[in-house]
Length: 162
Image 1: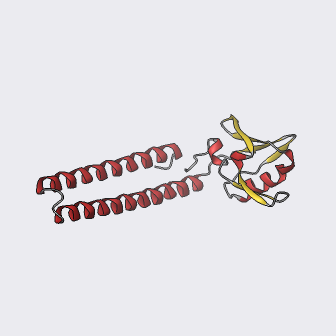
Image 2: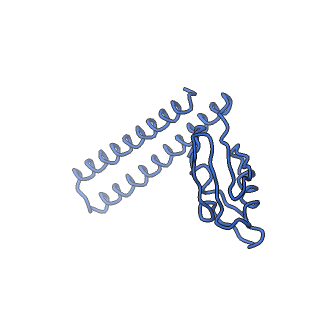
Image 3: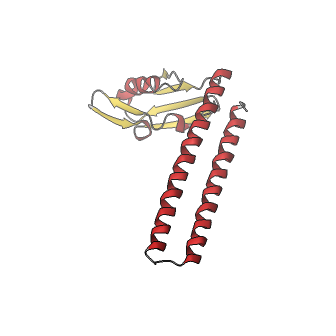
C-alpha cells in the first residue's frame, strides 16, 4: 500500500521487529497495540515494555519517514506532511506498481488462453466454447485493467499529484 500522509496502522503494522533479548523477529502488529489517535500520528503500545527500544529502532530503520518518540509506556509516531517531491515520487511508485499488475494480468490471460486452446486441440471443448471462453477471458482482463486504472487515479487524487 502507498500511504498519502494520513496516519494509518497499516503504515507500521507489518514492520518486522528483531527482538535482541529473544533472538527472534516478529511483526509489529503481533507484539503491540497500534492506534491512530488523530490523522497525523500513530501510537504503538508494546505488550512487553522491554521491547520498546527494539520497536523504536525497527520503525526508524523501515525508511517510511516516521521517527517514533518514546512517551512512557508507548511510542508516539508523528506522520510528517508529504512534500511535493515525495508526492511525485509516490505517484511514480503507484504507476510502477500498476504496470506490474497489468503485466501479471496479461501473463494470467496468456496462461488461461493457452489452457483453453489446449483443451480445444484435445477436443475437450467445441469451437463455440473456445470463442466464448476467449471472449470471457478478454472481458475479465479488460475489467481488471480498468480497475487498476481507477485505483491509480484515486491514489493520484489522494496524493494531489495528478
